[in-house]
Length: 133
Image (cartoon, rainbow, N blue to C red; front, side):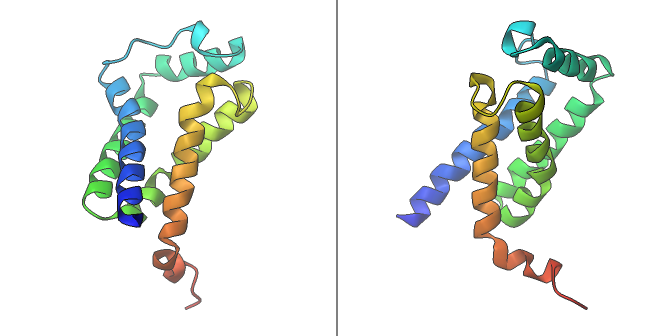
């Protein structure tokens, strides 16, 4: 049962990682004011989009690499690689977009919970990072 649960969670994790990848290749339409809860959050996203979109491309590359890592059984590295982006997504929604319980924050919160789950599941792998030398 645990094996099937892990595969199911990996599929959800991967599907959420596909969103910025597809956004960087313009499969999705550009963000609009209606997608955000206040003008400041939209202005922030607009600023990121107007700055040559390099942030979006870097994020897409990190997610694409992590996607490959997930499905080549390198979950510990994938979860660690997307952790800074996950923290920023949650912080954006928590502090700028009106909170973690808004409709737009659901994918980010789900992604953070899944990332936390996979980090916890792989915690033995990270023990060497914290060992004194």
